Image (tube, rainbow, N blue to C red; front, side, top):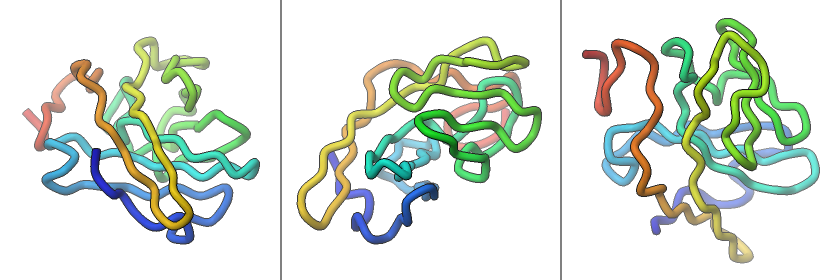
Amino acid sequence: MFAACSRSAIEPGEALRLDGPETKGVPIAVFHTDDGEFFAIDDTCTHQDASLADGWLEGCEVECPLHASKFNLRTGSADAPPAKRPVRTHQVTLDEETVFITLSDEAPNLPPGVVPGGVA
């Protein structure tokens, strides 16, 4: 588990991209929903290399800015094509000030040509 950011660093309805040594080469997107919930998923669409933190957040779903695939923030499921594979989700823990993330042990579902740490 690592401290990702302060709770106030992400406004409701917005996201923050994390890309540092603590993410082990796979960028993470942290979302703060309008309902006040926080979620963390891999920041790369499983269809093509695009940042989901740059997408559109609606409820507990994010739409990829490149081809409009939608992903459920709770489960990571791909809810709208062209993406077919889910994104990896990560456990989020909150205290009064800080958002903590525990990375999933599962392998990331990166799009073709993308490997942890960069493009193949």
